[in-house]
Length: 120
Image 1 (spheres, rainbow, N blue to C red):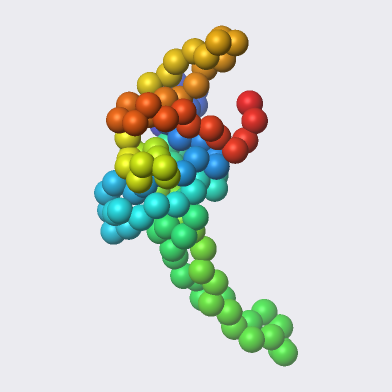
Image 2: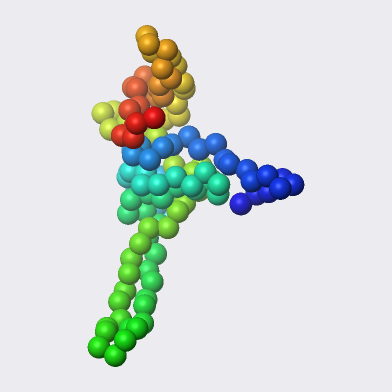
């Protein structure tokens, strides 16, 4: 986390929880998935079934067995791009106002309006 003086910086992240994205760089390049969680303080996002890590845990008590746990690890938000499921294309977005003066994300390549699953 970056600090300037005693202030903590929050990064502006272009995706939200529930958005459908495409990974544009890294070992998972080309994969399409959904945002599970956003971390604005570190500029990263948690994506379903992307950047999977493995953790081995030892047995804690006498009768227990060890476990192998697989979980997602965050990736940087610049490595993901909004994705249109109708046209099957990743695109940047612009913000426009609808008739009731509410901001909407509109994909630049397709003109499709992005609807997030969470409510503001």
